[in-house]
Image (cartoon, rainbow, N blue to C red; front, side):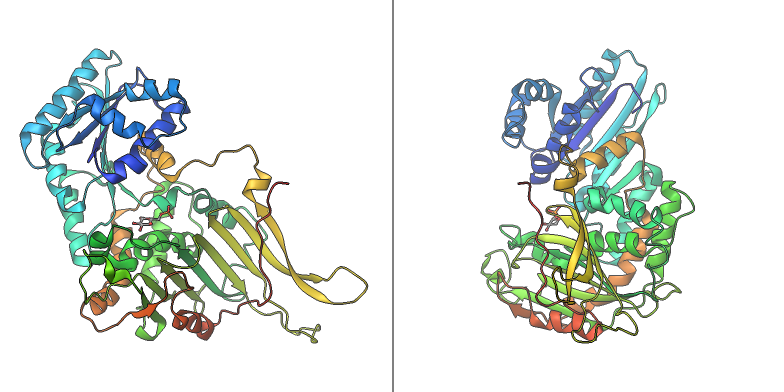
Length: 484
Ligand code: BG6
């Protein structure tokens, strides 16, 4: 990491995201020495009237288990500035605080990172304020970068409007659109897996792959976020961003190099190759009890579950369904990619239908990759059974701590690496895929079906997967190995 004076400004410092994700990520970067006292100052900005100590105490509450020595040193780096999100006064004050710190540091540099842990409705005004009052002075070397969080709009038009508003204020290389799924270890591994293994190269296509599922499940509901969630629904909350980013990395062509722009070019290309979604390849669900939340309207049609088939119109994938499925209040919490291969032609083990080969990448929890194989059942009989080659990270990498997504992404921003951030044209292509469907749902043309909380979701979703070709292996279950 380049050295010099770094100011990290967390806007919306007293909000949930900042407390749960941003500050803890900064702490962990500090703990590991990626940001250091003397080099870095952290500024919390929000409307509430808080003292420095007040903010520090709040953050402390989210860092249980941290070493006291590190923690108190870290907290001393944090200052609080209060102000509104649309008036010059607060930002002028913020700028003075940052400048004062920069003057006291004799490195001659000024690196300013603004993290907008705020609702997107205030992005335009906040960015305008930053642009007007808080840019890094040209007399010093350095930069100003802005991290923004989803939702980036609600559909194609609103996203484009937001993009142009921000685009007038900042260059694309100053804007970091975060999608925290891109910071997950096994998502980052996809590129290596696909393009550094001879084994996969010839198999990863329509000749061998029957279908691919990208699945996100949560075993809790919208718990107190009903008001926000109801405006967006599961497609905008999870599928259009997190699952679609994973889809890009699974489906895209090999990039020219590892340069962020080369990778993002390929992501855009595969998104642009996605066919319009067909109504009959969509299942929407809403868990029973969702509308008990007083902030959710009684007639809400917002999906808390969706299964959507994407079809890629290109040489590699024509005819292969990509099933993107996400749901809240289901029976388990996990996220995984499941690549199911076609049946073996000319099967000679006819006595029993063989299960298909499947390559599963478990993104979370218990990161793992396993490959379902058919093997001879050990013993005297000549019988076959399903087993697996298993790479479970907990077993294989016993002393490695897998970093939090936010930690890496903030570090990338400090390093100026945009590979794991969403580019403007990528965002546009992502919205193009889902906007017609979202408009139909909003207009009530497509209805959600109810499902039991704690279940697998609507049975129609399993039927859809089966209809497009997914074959479940009955009687086989992968049990994550545990350390003895
Ligand atoms: C967020 C969504 O982006 O991702 C939440 O808004 C969801 O609804 C969360 O719970 C899931 O993230 P993770 O990292 O826990 O899988």
